[in-house]
Length: 500
Image (cartoon, rainbow, N blue to C red; front, top):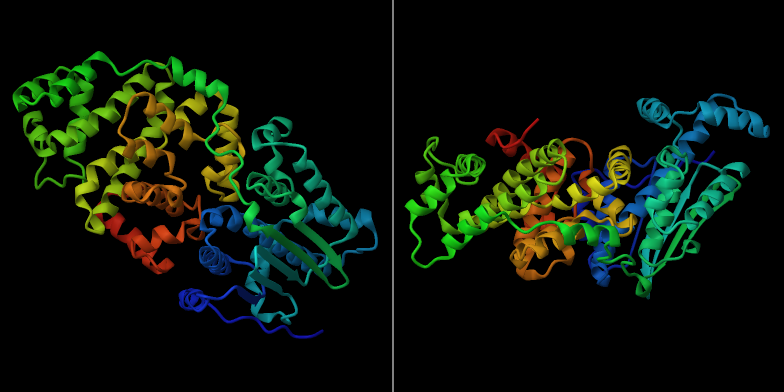
C-alpha cells in the first residue's frame, strides 16, 4: 500500500498560502482528513480565486457547496475504515447495509482522530481547485470507495432534490430531511439550482480504490435565482400592518421642529414608560459609555442627542407596532439577540475608529432580524426548520433562507421598514446584513458592522464556523487569522458586552 504525502499547512501559515495565490488560477493540496483547519484554508482559497476572477459575490454559496462535498468525501473515507476494522463483508449487500446503519460518523471520527498518528497514511483527500477560462472547477479524489448501492443512493438523492424548487417544498415533503445520510448532497443540489446551475454540474464516480467528485461551474451563468422575491402572503401581511403609533409620530414631529427644546422632548418621553425605559437602557449601555449610571431622562436626552433620539424612535416604534399584532414572548426572544448584536456592532465601530456611525449601527442592528417575526408568525414550521437545519449542519441561516424562496427574512425586514419610510441606510443594512458584499459602498460601514456583529455570537456559540465569515469583512476589521478573531472575542468578554 503506497504512502501518501500530505500538504503541509496549519493555522499559522494559511494566510501565507492564500497570499501566494494572487494572480494564480489553481490550488492543489492533499490532506488525510477534512477538519476545521482545512475548512478554513479551502474557504479562503475559494474566496481568493473567485475574487481574482470578479465573482466574489458567489463566494458564500460556492464555499458551502464545496464544504458539503468535502464532508461527504470525508465520510466515505471514515466509513471505509469502519467497514475494514469491523470486518464487514462488502460483497454482501445486506451485511454492508446493516453495518452502515450501525455507523456513527461523529463517534467513529473521534476514534479515528485519536489514532490518526498511528495510521499507515494511505487515507487521503486530494483537492484540486482551479479557474480555467470561464469555468470554476473542483476535483476531489478520496481514498475511500463507494459501494454500488451507496452511489445509487447518492444519485437518488440528487434526483429527489431536483423535484423541488425550494427548501420549503422539501420540508413539507419530509420535515426530518436533514437527518438523511445524503442530506449534504440534497442541499448542494438545491444550492446549485439557487445560483442557476444544473445538477449535472456535479458528478460523483466510484473507481477501484478511490472516489472522484467533480464540480464544473460555468461562471457566466451564475446568478441569484430568487433575488428579492417575497411571497404574496408576506406582501399582504406587510400591507395591513399599521403605521407608527400617534405618540411616536408626535415625538418625531417635535424633534424635527426647528424650535425644539430638551424640556418639551423630555416631557413627551416621560409620558411613555416603555420609551423611558428604552432610553435609559441605551444611555447606560456601552454605546454611550457614561462614567456613572444615568437615571434621569433629562440628562439621558442630552447625552444621546437629537440624532440619537431619532434613531431610537425608529426602533421603538417598529417593535411597538409588531408587539400589538404578534406573540410578545417570541418578540422578546428575538430582542435579546438583537440587543446583543447591537452592542457588539457598536463596539466594532468604535474599535476601528468609526464612532460617528455608532448610533446608526446600533439601530440597524436592533432591527436586523425584524423580518423573522413576520416569517415566524405566518410560517412557524418553516422558521423552526431553518433554525434546526442551521444548528445541526452549521449552515448560515441566510443561505437556508435563500433556498426557501420568498421567505428571506432580510428582504422581508427591509420591505417592512421601507413601508414605514425609514432612511435608506437602515433599509440597506437590514437587507444585506447576511450579504454584505452586495451592499453599495455608501452603506458599507453600517452593514459590515451589523453583519460581523451578528456573526460573532453565532461563532462564539458554535452555531456557525469562523470559515463561513466573509473574508472581505474580516479584512475591513483587520482580522486576518482565527487568532485575531479569538482575541476579539476575549476583548468583548472582558468588556462585559458578551452574554454567555
